[in-house]
Length: 253
Image (tube, rainbow, N blue to C red; front, side, top):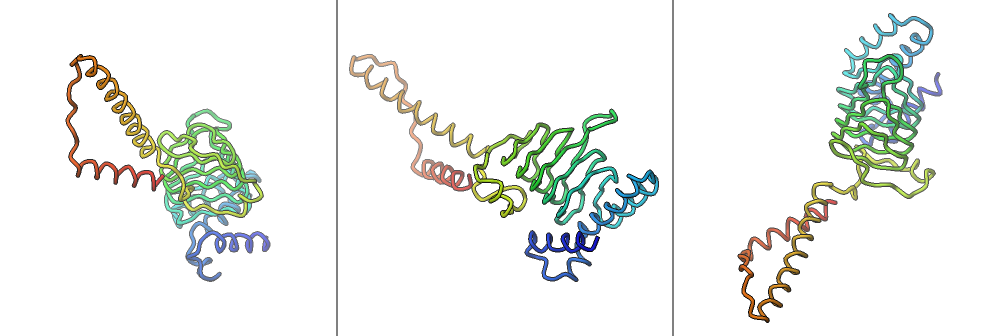
């Protein structure tokens, strides 16, 4: 038991630069209180003291703003940062070294008994406000960006963002290296913005079509065929604004 307590405290120090000392971790991290409360309630749940387990989980939710059903299975070195609004359902299974931020829901989509909540592999990071719904699996080292809604499985070593979430990046680094890294909120500096990427693709496509149309019109005019309508030219300021927006979107992606 002492070993796990020390491990939990060390995990917070490793993943949160705001944690300055052990006393601060013990008195100012509700995610830690929720985890320890869950371990007790989960023990009671497994020993057929379900009513007491539910009562204890309710008290913990009142104190921390974090709701973890006592039936949920949680691995080692689990970290809930900030914590307020986190909901973890009854049949959820969470591997080792996982991180959840505030507002995350690991919820079910069915009223049937049995497995109805997500399964998280090892070293999974779920960004703030994300919703993982249904009996789906997020593979080892998967990341989910903030406010995403995930209803389908996410492969290992992948990043998913958006509503509904789509896999936008598959990391090629080895699991050994990945386990030594930590990405806050489930996103990295080079995580692409799907909207910005789509806009850039559309702009490139329009420019390609415009150039093709100009070449066609030149060929027709050379044969004295006048059917092309002159396209209004953009003002220089408009072009500069468009280029600046495009460059800014590329930098963010």
